[in-house]
Image (tube, rainbow, N blue to C red; front, side, top):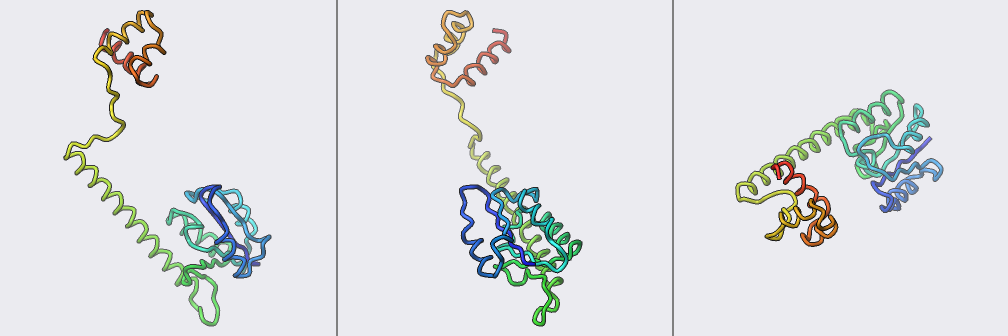
Length: 200
C-alpha cells in the first residue's frame, strides 16, 4: 500500500503543491494524510493515524524531508522506527537519494538513505549552531555600542510622582492618573509598586 503525508505549519498555508505531487506519484486520495500544525514533534493527529496504518512493505511518500518534521534528531528516530521496526519504506520526492526502496537500480536504498539523513542532520545542527553563534556575537557587539534591548522605558512627565501620589491619596482615580501620565495600566502600577518599595 502507498501512503502520502502532507504537512503545513498553519491553517492559512496551502497544501496544494504537496498534495498534487503525491497524487501525480500515484498516491490515492484516501491514502493521503494531512496535518496543519507545527513540525516540532510527531504528536500530530493525522500523522499518528497514518503511522498506525503502516505495515511491512508499505511505502510512505512525502514531498520534502521538512514536511516530516523540523528536528533532525527526531526525524532520524522516526525514520528508523518506520523503516526498521515497522519495515515500511519512505520516499522523499524532492531528494531522490532519500528513498529506502530496494530495486534493480537501487540495491542499497536503505543504506544510502540512512547515510544521507545523517549528513543532513549534521549540516542542519551545524547551521543552527552557527546561527546561535552569529546571534550571540551580534548581541555582544550591539551591547558594546550601547544598544539597549527590550522595550524602551516610558517617558514620564516631570510631575509624574506627584500624579501617582494624588492617585494613592485617592484625590484622582487610577484611570485619570494613567491618562495624565500617558502610560499603560501596567506601567502605572509598576511605578506604584516601585514607589512603595522605596518607602514612599
